[in-house]
Image (cartoon, rainbow, N blue to C red; front, side, top):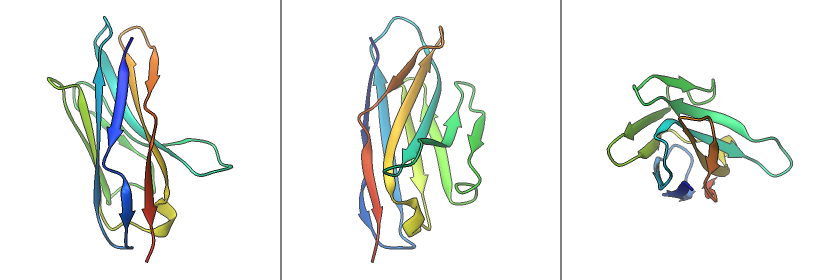
Length: 116
C-alpha cells in the first residue's frame, strides 16, 4: 500500500511564496504520475498541476506562471513551488500519486491560507 504524506502548508501574505512537498512511499508498483489538487469547502477538488515520471507537466490555468511542479524520482517526492500567492489560492492542497496499474493514492492534505 502506498502512503502519501504532504508538508509545507501554512499562512502567507498575498504576494508571498510557499513550497509544498509530498513523499509517496511503499507499494509494489512504481509511481507514475504525481499531482497536486486543491479543494475549498463546498467545492469540488480541482487539479493544480501534475508531472509524469518523465517530467512532462500540466498546469491549471490559475497556476500557470506562478506555480512550478517538480519531482525527484529516486525519492518519489514531488514539490509545488507557489509564488505570488493570492487569497483565491486559499484551500486544502492534496497530493495524489498514481502507480503503474492506475491506482490512486491521496495524502491527508495540507492547509494553505493566503491572507493579510
